[in-house]
Image 1: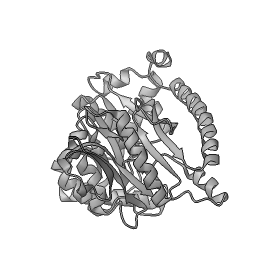
Image 2: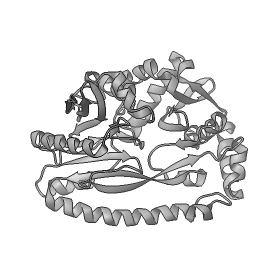
Image 3: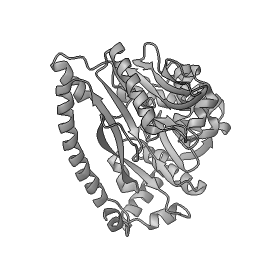
Image 4: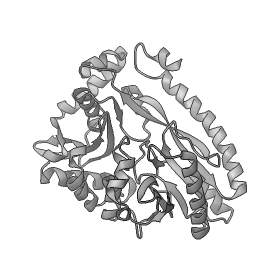
Length: 384
């Protein structure tokens, strides 16, 4: 006789790795057990971080049949689906916005599955169970709402959730033979711009190399951490969301999944850009520099990634959130989605209206992005 159980765990270690992995065989690298668990093992999430681990599991007898990576949040940092305005509205009304519950991968604005399910499971049954458990969790922690971030385009969400759209810029490999073949598809003006930008880095005397995680030396790993921390410190006033232990665990457990581009000047490492990869996609995640060199960011974060995708025959390159300047360099607009539920009825109604207006704005922004793509012949196809 089948016995179905479900509930919440506060450590991923409480879920058998093999069972979790059975649910994510077709997923990208960021919902894999080891990647999620490294955040917990390193202390980047958990106690005193504002990220209270709260994953959901559903069992049929002793078999894990569904799971959700989740967190109770006490702030909105590190999410990349910006709701600071919503929190401000709550505060002005004297209503608590935090805590809230989110399903997400910490500090990772990458679309992937959020409700992980075995192939033979009834999705409607899973949603019913999950919603029941979420309401119980809400009553326990008194959170303001539930948020599913960077969900797939095909996601079948509950009717109680409101859809939100954002735009990212992704590069797609059209079976290019090399970088010059890619450039040949661009307008003459944009070809010249990109060649000039790449040539400028070389003219500075900067050398660039790509290394796999497995071939990086201790010196390279130390540089990567230092670049990450220094750049965060300059731009945000803190040393970043990820600590040295996070990098050490990535090195130990996931080195085969990463590629890092390094820049050096007079044999001194001065910048680094960290990428993850799977069977068909390259993901640009973190960049940092110890010295200012104009256009170096474009070389390390974009052009080297494009080169790598062409060489390795990867189909897609997701270079991270935001950055409209990517459009002029061959990245195309791509919709990203999230789903939201606010428990306060007046705020929920206001959000529904806001999201309708925002979707119309995003549609306009998407069309404007298509208008400035640098490709010679495909723009009309993308518009159709």
